[in-house]
Length: 138
Image (cartoon, rainbow, N blue to C red; front, side, top):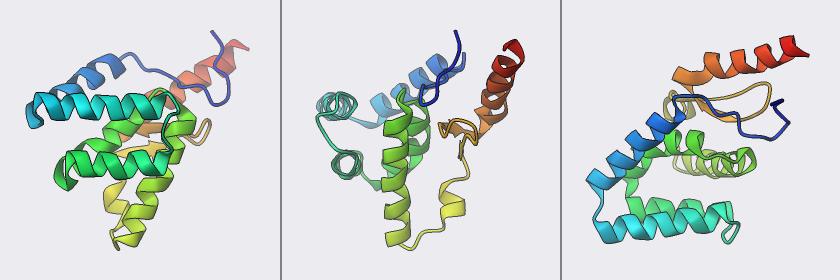
């Protein structure tokens, strides 16, 4: 299947990374908090919330410590590139407004120079190789 611009390019390890992220959330939240967060996430992914509202509410629900530890991975696993970019804008604005060092905050994620997908730094080269393999098939 040929990749299309704006389409999420899924790597084989995403299922495992998603399960690990969920496990960290389960370990850090009560059942009610987790259900509330999942409802919030579903509302955003279904287009019922704008990125800024989702970002603010997510930070409030998770608390700053948990939020900062899971956000980069969570955004990279979100299967919608447009939503990733909108959340990334919110995150950058938040970091700038708080006077935080963007280089420190963005050590673990990269933006693909081909498709603008947010990708975990450890997955970046594999992600780009998938694009290159598709080019060779044409």
